[in-house]
Amino acid sequence: MREIRVGLIGFGTVGSGVVKCLHNNGKLIGARSGVQPVIHKIADLDIVTDRGVPIDKSLLTTNVSDVLDNPDIDVVVELVGGTTIAKDFVLRALKNGKPVVTANKALLAYHGDEIFAAANESGADIYYEASVAGGIPIIKALREGLAANHIRAIYGILNGTCNYILTRMEREGLSFQPVLDDAQALGYAEAEPSLDIDGDDTAHKTTILASLAYGEWFGMKPLFIEGIRHLDLVDLRYAAEAGYKIKLLGIIKLAGNNGTIEMRVHPTLIPTGSMLANVSEVFNAVYVKGDVVGDTMFYGRGAGMDATASAVVADLVDVGLNLTFESPQRVSAFRPHGTYSDVVDMEDIDCRYYVRLEVLDEPRVLGRIADILGNGGISIASVTQEEAKPGTDSLPIILITHQAKERSIRRALTEISQLDVVRGTPVMLRIEDI
Ligand code: HSE
Image (cartoon, rainbow, N blue to C red; front, side):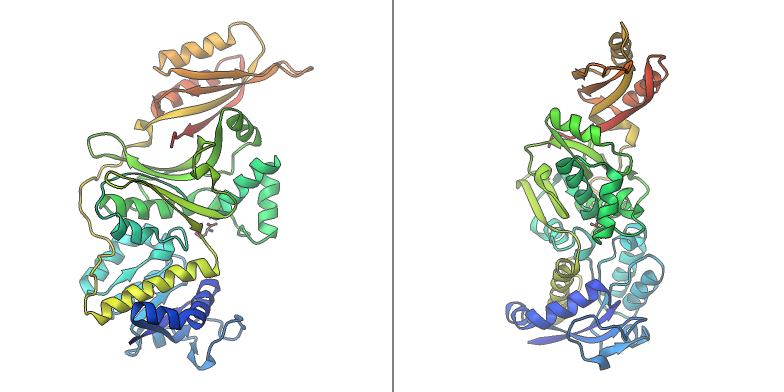
């Protein structure tokens, strides 16, 4: 049995989870894999606070060099987070020839090209299973399990905070803000929640999955990102009446037959009966469509001490096996295959749309709106109109369109919003018939 000496940088929730997992399941992990990850050093600024996990205090250090420059350490686990010092630590570890395991999605999303280049140069492994969808082994699935496939599409519920908020809005008929307040009080949402609710965290994970699927390190630039902050409860209700639920999705898919892809993050109407629509609370799920395998779906906890530790420890086993069999980079962290490269501009995507308009209760209103949509080549699939409530002179109209270009719907809605019979700003949401 080969012992793998692990240096942890960052002794927060996930770091504590890794220590706990290795303590509780270490024997099983060793017996199953033939490698035995053992914590050798833990670097953190705070080495005083009790994390509630069994650890020999002599392993703790405030000096990161005790991990990064320590010849006894076989593998560095970066759990610091952020994109500044974490980047320095990862690059320094790789430069020292040490394999790295990281859970840091933002770091990869913004600096993946530099980090993978450094890994290639040094010949050391970099593994990052915990960076996307926590405990769900989706990175390994895309890199190895689905290696036989051209990936047709990936739809991911990749942020537990957003999924929790949307689930409660839908189930309890609550608006966004009170649910966010509650989620913060319960510790599900951060005190500064924008990374989650504005879609950036989902975007970081989406670009990692897209790169694995399509062999180009895309980074963040080509991504269209829209979060859930602006979602109005009435749209969840109208969507439900039309047979849809609203989920924040990371969407990656082939745009046509010419090898271009779509990559976007936004609240999306998906059929109520679909498996993804029934992923609730803080759970994550990734639906992958391959040309050989067909439809697959991966479900589990996307965050938290234990789920994330499960992914980190799985990576430690992979690194340990590669060290044991002297086969670092046996499975490349990221191998460009250049089959697909162009990401379609958001205005050029084809989609179905949900539109809500508040209009005056007067003759010819629907006709004028239909004319504008028709002139833009947009075909209406359904229209729902409620009667104006007593004492009000306006009413909502819900339109669902057939497939149309994003550019066309944006133009049409700009024109519609300028009509004297339209109140406020039209609401537009995208539909995916998964
Ligand atoms: N904050 C994320 C979530 C987990 O709510 O899913 C880390 O990416």
